[in-house]
Length: 369
Ligand SMILES: C[S@@+](CC[C@H](N)C(=O)[O-])C[C@H]1O[C@@H](n2cnc3c(N)ncnc32)[C@H](O)[C@@H]1O
Image 1 (cartoon, rainbow, N blue to C red):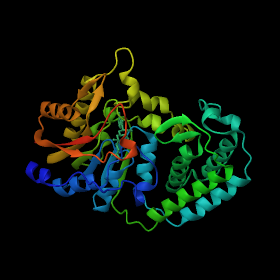
Image 2: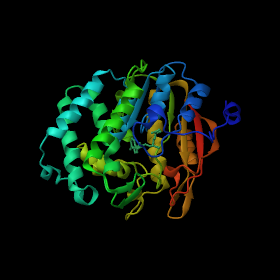
Image 3: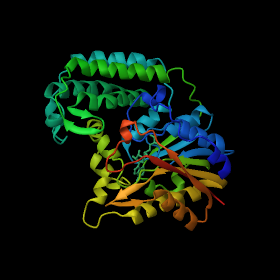
Image 4: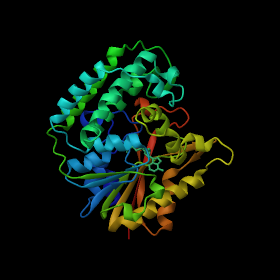
């Protein structure tokens, strides 16, 4: 198996991440869909469902679905779960009526922005006139609260435009600048996002179901996973690299989630590495061992688990995260199939993290005995 895996091209140099379904919402450190696709084709899932315990924006779940597999995704971040649910659930043309209606209702509404005072530094990150229009849209979307599929899709569309209409320079640059966004732009961006959702999700053959669980993976028990798992494929968070809670902080505030509680449990978040008694590689080892222990409970015998992970730098020391996953798997009695590296496309903006310098990733494959 290792020889077969190593022979394949894993670099996908000319790939673009965000096309079609994968472009409906920004997400940091997304899988290129070709990676889970090649993993699924090579390792197979003869029985049971495909599990991604850190599903993020649901790339692996969508790929599984496109190949006719049922899937289960887990993520701590509620924005990740919202995107994953939306990407794996077909829409009907009712969605088109709904977003037109929401737009019509929103422009007529009167709102009181003092209800936004719970959002820290709101005036620094959003101009008053923008706050008013986003709140109007949010209020109009609330009319669809009882129709979960449409409500989720409308909220995902709103979430996808939050950074664009804010004063934040870009998704990856946290500086406030004047972007000259007009209040009307809020509506045209929202409408474009809804059109993108319609184009990708109406008449889409998402027949294989996908279950999304919004939970800290270290608190998920085997009883939370309702089906036996035939393949695990994931790209875990790792120390001192991306901060998913920070990337989605204002999206979470606007959609009534709590970014601070997400930050607390987020594996690898930089805050955990810059405090007294800070986290170390040892913490990551235990977090991955916890995840593997759950995998051991839910995987069928002889099923594979593939982890795609980069290296970390913690206070100057380079940490081989792939080896920590292998060590945890070995202690739990998995067969270690092996590890191999892939080169990453360094032009991709979301990967240019100066503190992490991520140029290579390692694919680790283990097998339940
Ligand atoms: C590398 S990203 C996954 C990206 C995904 N492969 C995609 O294509 O979008 C890692 C994910 O782990 C999630 N995560 C971090 N800590 C977690 C925890 N304790 N439990 C569950 N998920 C967690 C983050 O929210 C993030 O979405």
